[in-house]
Length: 270
Image 1 (tube, rainbow, N blue to C red):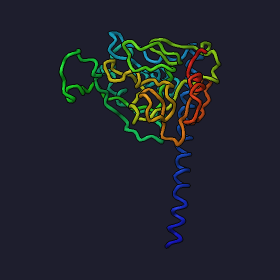
Image 2 (cartoon, rainbow, N blue to C red; image 1 turned 60 degrees about the horizontal axis):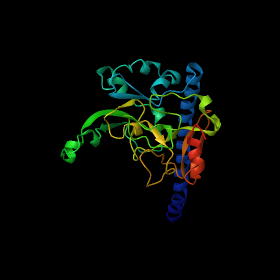
Image 3 (tube, helix red, strand yellow; image 1 turned 45 degrees about the horizontal axis):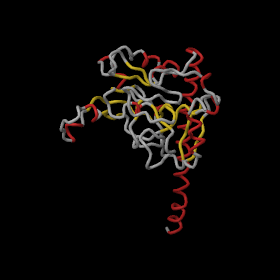
Image 4 (spheres, helix red, strand yellow; image 1 turned 180 degrees about the horizontal axis):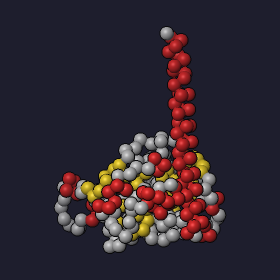
């Protein structure tokens, strides 16, 4: 029994490592699928999807994944989304209730859906609200782990957001010719855990808390930094996170990456 106990103790870490290696590979394959869809979208439209685009009336924003759906065998889902209507329109109930496996990292501890709450700053200054009154639920959204790269600038707000320096911006599409350092040297999508901030693939109500950060991320304080902003990138893969580059390849970037180089990768221009 003692020998069996020792063998089990020796084997368990190896089994855990093998399982994580398999999950990390699956995560890599998800990003490769997204990268292939990006390439096909660019070939057809001569541009990448907009980071997020406003609906008429500026009450909602649709994320960069929505225009990719026809290029990743999700044409039927794409037909359920009318970007000329607000996200909370009854027509979008099915889409808002759809969780996409390829937008989730298998290593993360996620719920398929999360509730987007109203941003406290939406209340008038000087008004007094209790925490319960301030937590107004706006809508339930499908969770995602992969967010477009906004650049090296924080993208918390959508009304309007600051001008980003990465590939996925507010109401503006970028092209591969904009990548001054080349597509193989520019990151365009990265991971983020649900614990840092729940993100989504479909879009947001613009009154929501950290609305833009639900769709895009920024290279700010590094990867898996416990003191990082909610916009930063993170994963549950030990030691780093996966990133998709402009040319479609995927690499694992370690937590020890040089911040100067990391920031350069996230920018379209020097």
